[in-house]
Length: 156
Ligand code: FES
Ligand code: FES
Image 1 (cartoon, rainbow, N blue to C red):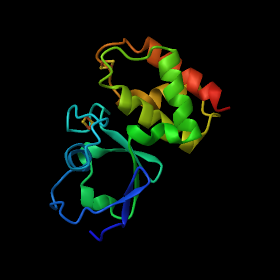
Image 2 (tube, protein in one colour):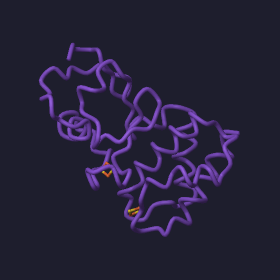
Image 3 (cartoon, helix red, strand yellow):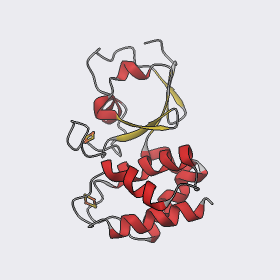
Protein backbone atom coordinates (compact mmCIF):
# COMPACT_ATOMS: atom_id res chain seq x y z
CA UNK A 1 0.00 0.00 0.00
CA UNK A 2 1.65 3.29 -1.02
CA UNK A 3 2.49 5.60 1.85
CA UNK A 4 0.06 8.46 2.24
CA UNK A 5 -2.66 7.01 0.03
CA UNK A 6 -4.94 6.37 2.95
CA UNK A 7 -6.03 8.90 5.55
CA UNK A 8 -7.14 8.14 9.07
CA UNK A 9 -8.86 10.98 10.86
CA UNK A 10 -7.49 13.37 8.26
CA UNK A 11 -3.85 12.32 8.55
CA UNK A 12 -2.02 10.28 5.93
CA UNK A 13 -0.89 6.89 7.17
CA UNK A 14 1.72 4.50 5.86
CA UNK A 15 0.24 1.04 5.96
CA UNK A 16 2.86 -0.62 3.79
CA UNK A 17 3.88 -2.99 6.61
CA UNK A 18 0.35 -4.30 7.12
CA UNK A 19 -0.06 -8.01 6.26
CA UNK A 20 -2.61 -8.91 3.62
CA UNK A 21 -4.91 -10.62 6.11
CA UNK A 22 -4.94 -7.92 8.78
CA UNK A 23 -8.31 -6.47 9.65
CA UNK A 24 -8.85 -2.73 9.78
CA UNK A 25 -10.04 -3.09 13.39
CA UNK A 26 -6.64 -4.44 14.41
CA UNK A 27 -4.72 -1.88 12.40
CA UNK A 28 -6.61 0.94 14.05
CA UNK A 29 -6.37 -0.41 17.57
CA UNK A 30 -2.90 -1.92 17.64
CA UNK A 31 -0.84 -0.16 14.97
CA UNK A 32 -2.37 3.29 15.23
CA UNK A 33 -3.39 3.16 18.92
CA UNK A 34 -6.92 4.34 18.12
CA UNK A 35 -8.62 2.21 20.74
CA UNK A 36 -11.90 4.08 20.72
CA UNK A 37 -12.99 1.64 18.04
CA UNK A 38 -14.10 -1.37 20.06
CA UNK A 39 -13.73 -5.05 19.44
CA UNK A 40 -16.86 -7.02 20.21
CA UNK A 41 -17.86 -10.08 18.24
CA UNK A 42 -15.41 -9.85 15.30
CA UNK A 43 -18.14 -11.46 13.20
CA UNK A 44 -20.15 -8.44 12.08
CA UNK A 45 -22.94 -8.89 14.59
CA UNK A 46 -22.55 -6.14 17.21
CA UNK A 47 -21.51 -2.86 15.58
CA UNK A 48 -18.94 -2.00 18.23
CA UNK A 49 -16.19 -1.70 15.61
CA UNK A 50 -18.02 0.73 13.30
CA UNK A 51 -15.94 3.36 11.47
CA UNK A 52 -16.67 5.65 8.55
CA UNK A 53 -15.10 4.87 5.18
CA UNK A 54 -15.44 7.90 2.95
CA UNK A 55 -18.31 8.98 5.17
CA UNK A 56 -20.24 5.71 5.16
CA UNK A 57 -20.52 3.28 8.03
CA UNK A 58 -18.45 0.11 7.81
CA UNK A 59 -17.60 -2.69 10.19
CA UNK A 60 -13.86 -2.63 10.69
CA UNK A 61 -13.83 -6.23 11.92
CA UNK A 62 -15.04 -7.40 8.50
CA UNK A 63 -12.81 -5.06 6.50
CA UNK A 64 -9.28 -5.91 5.46
CA UNK A 65 -6.97 -2.97 5.86
CA UNK A 66 -5.78 -3.28 2.29
CA UNK A 67 -9.36 -2.89 1.09
CA UNK A 68 -9.41 0.72 2.29
CA UNK A 69 -6.43 1.87 0.28
CA UNK A 70 -7.02 5.44 -0.82
CA UNK A 71 -10.04 5.88 1.44
CA UNK A 72 -10.68 8.33 4.21
CA UNK A 73 -11.21 6.50 7.50
CA UNK A 74 -12.88 8.27 10.40
CA UNK A 75 -12.94 6.78 13.89
CA UNK A 76 -14.77 7.89 16.98
CA UNK A 77 -11.72 9.89 18.06
CA UNK A 78 -12.41 12.41 15.26
CA UNK A 79 -16.13 11.98 14.78
CA UNK A 80 -17.03 15.20 16.58
CA UNK A 81 -14.84 17.26 14.25
CA UNK A 82 -17.80 17.46 11.90
CA UNK A 83 -21.15 19.14 12.58
CA UNK A 84 -23.20 15.97 12.49
CA UNK A 85 -20.79 13.95 14.57
CA UNK A 86 -20.63 16.73 17.12
CA UNK A 87 -24.43 16.77 17.36
CA UNK A 88 -24.53 13.00 17.78
CA UNK A 89 -21.89 13.04 20.50
CA UNK A 90 -23.65 15.85 22.34
CA UNK A 91 -26.98 14.01 22.09
CA UNK A 92 -25.52 10.86 23.64
CA UNK A 93 -24.04 12.93 26.46
CA UNK A 94 -27.24 14.91 27.04
CA UNK A 95 -29.37 11.76 27.22
CA UNK A 96 -26.85 9.82 29.30
CA UNK A 97 -27.01 7.15 26.61
CA UNK A 98 -24.17 5.03 27.95
CA UNK A 99 -23.71 2.74 30.88
CA UNK A 100 -20.49 0.77 30.53
CA UNK A 101 -19.88 2.68 27.30
CA UNK A 102 -18.42 -0.20 25.34
CA UNK A 103 -21.00 0.03 22.58
CA UNK A 104 -21.12 3.82 22.51
CA UNK A 105 -18.39 4.54 19.93
CA UNK A 106 -20.07 2.20 17.49
CA UNK A 107 -23.45 3.84 18.01
CA UNK A 108 -22.05 7.36 17.67
CA UNK A 109 -20.12 6.57 14.49
CA UNK A 110 -22.93 4.56 12.90
CA UNK A 111 -25.54 7.24 13.60
CA UNK A 112 -23.25 9.95 12.27
CA UNK A 113 -22.81 8.03 9.03
CA UNK A 114 -26.52 7.37 8.76
CA UNK A 115 -27.52 10.98 9.35
CA UNK A 116 -24.88 12.21 6.92
CA UNK A 117 -26.16 9.83 4.29
CA UNK A 118 -29.90 10.19 4.86
CA UNK A 119 -30.06 13.61 6.48
CA UNK A 120 -32.51 14.49 9.22
CA UNK A 121 -35.56 13.96 7.04
CA UNK A 122 -35.34 10.22 7.70
CA UNK A 123 -38.24 9.08 9.92
CA UNK A 124 -37.19 8.22 13.44
CA UNK A 125 -38.61 4.72 13.01
CA UNK A 126 -36.32 4.16 10.03
CA UNK A 127 -33.30 5.44 11.94
CA UNK A 128 -34.06 3.15 14.86
CA UNK A 129 -34.50 0.19 12.53
CA UNK A 130 -31.28 0.90 10.65
CA UNK A 131 -29.38 1.19 13.91
CA UNK A 132 -30.56 -2.31 14.79
CA UNK A 133 -27.16 -3.77 13.92
CA UNK A 134 -25.63 -1.95 16.88
CA UNK A 135 -26.09 -3.89 20.09
CA UNK A 136 -26.01 -2.69 23.68
CA UNK A 137 -25.96 -5.05 26.65
CA UNK A 138 -26.54 -2.39 29.32
CA UNK A 139 -28.95 0.43 28.64
CA UNK A 140 -32.11 -1.27 27.42
CA UNK A 141 -31.96 1.14 24.45
CA UNK A 142 -34.29 3.77 25.96
CA UNK A 143 -31.65 6.47 26.37
CA UNK A 144 -30.00 5.49 23.09
CA UNK A 145 -33.31 5.87 21.28
CA UNK A 146 -33.78 9.32 22.83
CA UNK A 147 -30.24 10.28 21.81
CA UNK A 148 -30.98 9.25 18.24
CA UNK A 149 -34.09 11.43 18.22
CA UNK A 150 -32.22 14.35 19.82
CA UNK A 151 -29.36 14.14 17.33
CA UNK A 152 -31.78 14.07 14.43
CA UNK A 153 -33.57 17.15 15.74
CA UNK A 154 -30.27 18.97 16.30
CA UNK A 155 -29.23 18.77 12.66
CA UNK A 156 -32.61 19.60 11.12
S1 FES B 1 -16.70 -6.37 16.44
FE1 FES B 1 -17.32 -5.83 14.45
S2 FES B 1 -19.45 -6.12 14.38
FE2 FES B 1 -18.85 -6.84 16.35
S1 FES C 1 -23.55 0.82 27.48
FE1 FES C 1 -22.69 -1.14 27.94
S2 FES C 1 -22.92 -2.28 26.11
FE2 FES C 1 -23.96 -0.43 25.72
